[in-house]
Length: 203
Image 1: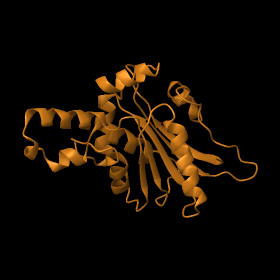
Image 2: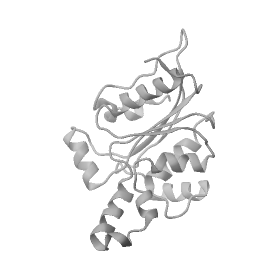
Image 3: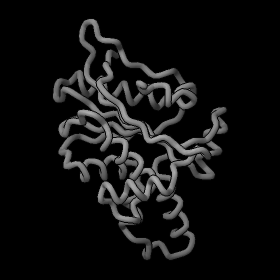
Image 4: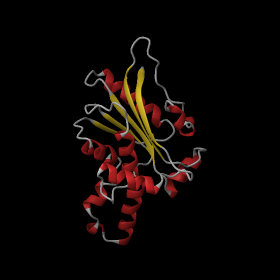
């Protein structure tokens, strides 16, 4: 795998390791998102919008351990509270794992392939491996890798089982195939990725 990092953007958590609600409200308004848009989507679109030199034709590779936790939890609550045939299709569609990159493609008018990967401590490596495969196929010059996590009771437990402090983040990496002399882009192996996510980005 030989990838080169061209640019990156990061929506970091606040002091309590969650995205600041006030910041997300401001970003929803700035990006023209509905007030009901979920937290992860707002955070990811914020990072994408601020990415320097973002191309409109780069495939999106989205990686998250558990996906849109606020939407999934809301759907589960609806399934408990209402008959199954009364659950709205929009509620379901917004809870699926590829809802966030789909929203990004729609928001930025990107007519590109979208890949959505779930997993745990080796997820970042697999996202980058897929980016390498996509770029090696020669159908695109760049790829956008999105790595993000949202907190919930279940997500916090999963992170603690990996020996991690629960946190929220949205990181976007603009990648190309490395050329001779380029510094290869890698991520720390395994769970160290989550501990060092902020250090992956240039100052």
